[in-house]
Amino acid sequence: MIQVNNVSKKYGKKLVVDQVDLNLEKGKIISLIGPNGAGKSTLLGMMSRTLKKDGGSILIDGRAITDWETIDLAKVLAIMKQSEHISIKISVRDLIAFGRYPYSEGKLTQEDQAIIQEAIDYLDLHDIADAYIDELSGGQRQRAFIASIYAQSTDYILLDEPLNNLDIKHAANMLTLLKKMAHEQNKTIIIVIHDINFASSFSDHIVLMDQGRVVQSDTVERVMQPEILEAIYGMPFEVIEVKGKRLCIYY
Image (cartoon, rainbow, N blue to C red; front, side, top):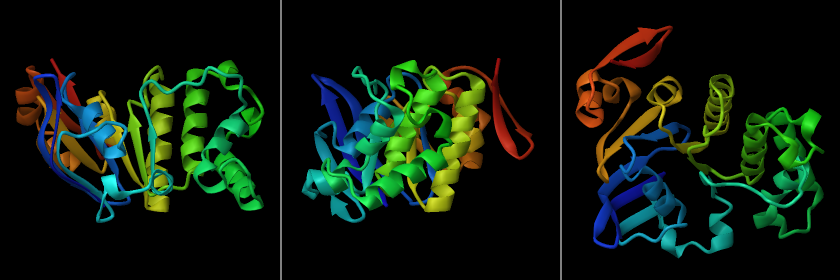
């Protein structure tokens, strides 16, 4: 479990995350949603220790995140940032191999190679495993980055807007795959996402933020209510059920 206790963050005089409390359980897809500037990416950055918090505490499996050695933290928590990119010429297979670095430190074992191949199989990257990252489409590139995270073999995966630059089909395929990973392998996958319909269709739990605070943290059914969404987004909503999924229509 990831526990966030009274966590805050300031940039200058601006309070961007304001005394947030959360308990995020294992084995679920958890989406952080809310308007621009709500504090979603900042909160995710503090949960990954890539951003320093100004107050409060964050615990992973009962241990303060500040107490983890970096190499040990990398074995339980992986993150993909919104700006993730690689400018060097590298193949998909070699990118995935980077996910094994916390274990191999660059000297890949047979076990590492087996996990790399498992990631290629799981993400269905056989046809492009030896292609270079800069030759791939946006959807293929995102799958390659997710495969690298898969190979890292962590219990917790934090993704900052992983659907950026993906069309509807590739975005839906990506979320389907992530939900499969969460449920089959008991991974906690926390996603910053702007599309509330993707969030409501694929999430097990929704954290709705506004102005640095958590407004609601609950099931899809309890958070995706017209009056709640209207209060945050400032426009009228209708919420309907289609094939067991909640869709949020604004007008």
